[in-house]
Image 1 (cartoon, helix red, strand yellow):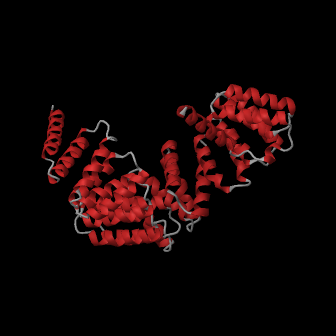
Image 2 (cartoon, rainbow, N blue to C red):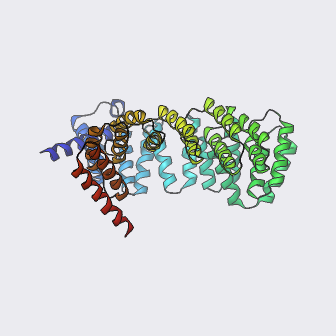
Image 3 (tube, rainbow, N blue to C red):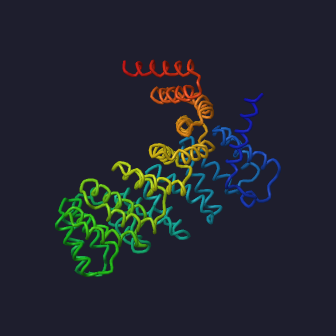
Length: 448
C-alpha cells in the first residue's frame, strides 16, 4: 500500500509539472470533452506516453481545430518522439494561430537548432529579438554555428558595446578565430579598423586576442599599450595587461591592473574570477606576494561577494598550509551558501584540524539537516564529540552513521577507530578491542 501511495504521489507531481505554462487564456471556452482530452494528453506526456498524448490531442482537434495550445502540445510530443517534421508542422501552425506567444517561437527556435537547421533557427531568433533583446547572444552563437563568422563577430561586438564583455563571448570570439584560420587577413582588417576608428576599443581587444592565440605576446602587449594610450580610461584593456605583467614578473603593475578589473562594472564575474585564479597560480610559483594577494582578493570580495570566491581562496591558503586564513574564507563562503556540501566538508575538516571542535559539532549538526545520508558528517561529528570528551554522544552518532556507509573502507576504518576511542574512554574495554580488531582487519584488506 505504501509503494502504491508513493507512486500515486509521484504521478500527481508529474501531472502538476505538465500543467505548468498552461493557463485558462490558452484554453478559452471549451467543452468538457475537450478539457478532458486535453488534460489526459498532458497526463500521458508527463509519464512519457507520447503516442497516447498525441491521440488525446487529436481528439481535441476534432472538437476545436483552432486552439494554438493544442498544436503546440502536439509539437512537443512529436519532438519527444524525434518526428521532427511533424513537430515543426504543429509548431508553425501554433505560431500562425498565436503569433504573440513567445513560448511557441522558443519551441520553434530550439527545434531548428537541434535539427542543425541554423538558417531557420536564425530567422526564429530574430523574431524573438523583436520583443526580447536577451536572445542576441543566441543569435551570435547561431551565426557561428552557421559559419557566418563576420556576422557573428559584428553581433558580439555590439553585445560587448551594449553590456560589457563576458568570458562566454570572449571564448566564442576565440573559437571563430580558430575556425577561420586566416589570421593574417583578420589582423589586417582589424588594423585598418583601428586606423579608421581609433576610439573603438573592441578592435584593439580583438587584435590582442588574435596575437595572444598566435603566441605573439610582444605584439599583443604593444597593442594593449596602444589602446591604453588612446583610451586611458579603458577598464577592458586591463583584462589583457594584468596577464602580460604577470608573465614579466611585474607584480606591482599586475596588481594595479587587477584592481581596475575587480572594481569595473563593465567586466563580468567569470572574467574577474579567472583573473584571481591566474594571480593565485602566480603567487604559488613566486614567493613574497602574500600582501598583494590579500589586497586584491579583499578588493574583489567587496564587489563580488560569492561563495565560489571564498571557496577558491580557502583552497589556496589551505594548500599553502595557512589553515587559519583558509578556515576564515571557508566559513565566510558557508554564510553565503550553506547548501554547498564540498564547502561544508572542507570547513569541518579544517575546524577539527585547528581544534575548533565546538564549531565543528554545531556545523555538522546543521549540515545533517540538509545532507542526512552523508556518512562523513556523522564521522566528523563523532570526532568532534570525542575531542570534547562527550564519549556517549560520540558512540551514539558514530554507530548511527555506520548505517549510511557503503563501500568506503578507509572511512569505515576511521569510524571503528573513533568508536574504539569512545568505548575505551567509557571503560567498555571489550567493545573497544572489538572495534580496534575490525579496523585492523580492514587495514589488512586495503594492503592486499
